[in-house]
Image (cartoon, rainbow, N blue to C red; front, top):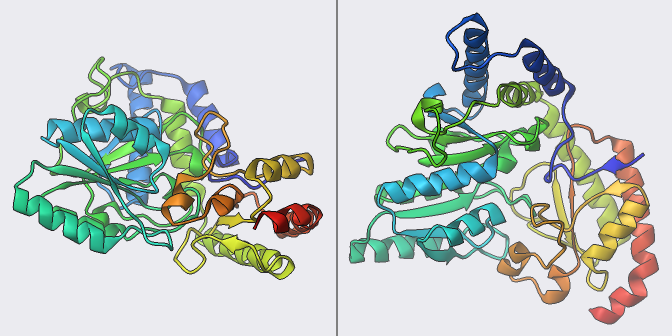
Length: 380
């Protein structure tokens, strides 16, 4: 049986979410229909919208349901373009969903650098906003992930949001990794847009949302029957939306602390057995569940395969790159050498993780590492 330690890629579906999905499927009904079945489906969607909006301190009417975080990001960029943006500036550690959408948007694209601890460089942001003000540029869309999916490093979202809003620009926060893992306050973030995804929290795949502030407008990227108040055409995924809300509601108040303790236990064991490894963002505030380590000389893909053969599911970074294992642009942006970037491993814990899983992984990884260490030593 596989020990699953890749929750940042997707979390196993929580039983509460699975039950909510099945109940919605069995009930049926189109939420746009006016008869009783349709009204009941609409009530389920709106109840779910309320649960999810409350979890991020957003208004119910702020939430637009989508097929996932990637669509939400594309919808936000589409909206920013309609609001006059001619340029997008995203952090150097953004997920490929943001990077690819920016590249395909037709907007001019700039990269916002990060510090060596993986946090967005706020001094750079201050200078860039000053230059934008002096040049009287059109609104710029700034994009910043709330937490890196690879290192777990939390970003100064609220500080950035205040600066960007005060300068009259637009702000998109990718909050996908926060869902079910750490608190995210949409109102406090200062963002006009924030993307969410159900499956990172133990909800079903294929459903997400875009939070939209009251001073921003969103026109449909997908045209159709005018659903989601004209902001996203197509019949709502009622079952998926209900599963999304159930997963969010199932996150217990002590879950974050329990997982953080497991992460600390795992880091302690790994560093005790291999003090030469690097844990990225170790000195910064991180998601409670994420460890990104480098063991130079032991390539990422070999580590992933070795752990898979031993019964542990981990990854070399983002899982959204068509199954490819490649050097992390996130670590390279943090100043990692090729040897460190090419030997990175991400371990991400979650609601299914137990102490025995942590201990078994640490023992197995250390055994495999020391078996490969002659090669590692030669490569450093």
